[in-house]
Length: 351
Image (cartoon, rainbow, N blue to C red; front, side, top):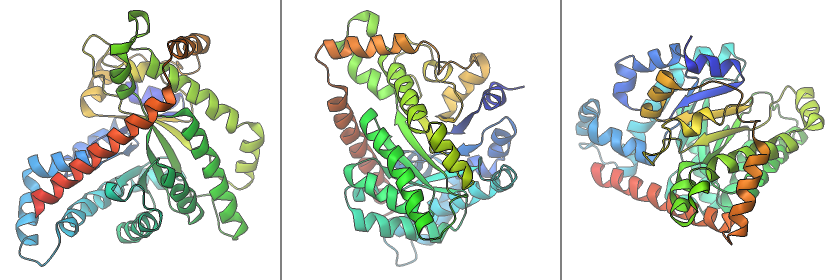
């Protein structure tokens, strides 16, 4: 039994943070599913790398270049086909699990991250064009993104809220999810099929902070924040909320750990996996981290342990005068810029 399947038995899903045409054509994605992977996340950087390095795109690109299409239209043609194929690969799992497993995420145009109306239109268009019930639309957790997320949930669209670094914003996302569900119910629409994840980014936090921290705190802040985020999630989705959700055959939003590849070679290569296993959680892993977890990861219900130690770490960081909310704002801005640059690179590749 693989570590991924053992983790699933504890109530946590493992998703793959990668997608390419070769992954699908080689049947590697079939193998991933067989060893326990239950979903896929993508972003502009992943697609940029795939289009640049995967020769299977070249024939399609050559054909697209003969058509009067914009670079963005060419990108969407390529990305949408991959996402549809991946959704189809997980379709049986999605149906048999009653909508619990088998999701594939695609990111909105990152240049729209602050634009409410344009993002809504783009999300609806992608949802209708891809036309797969196990699709998730990725929306950055900007100020506009929280409102976009709530509206899309009310419209019955699955959403992956991404680039979360803030505990406060994550709580707002949880409440927006519940509000979106209630709006949909008030409109006499079903909510049993709707799923969402709140993607909290981890390794970038430690990378940003370690240079300013005493040694005994280095490499501990991101895991501590994640443990606190889980406690917040448990508090919001308490017994009362779970009863309400169950009455309507609906589910809570899932917390998702993202940016889980360890950046510092001095740290464990499964730092953001072994320490954060818990029920109701998704962890999305790049292939390198996935292989490390399969080879030597430790599977235990670790997310709900050492909570006091995590609180002590966060208290010490606060006493040092470090604002984690200010850091979250900066890291989100940097993340958005990276996605914009990756998306711009795709457009230049296809122009």
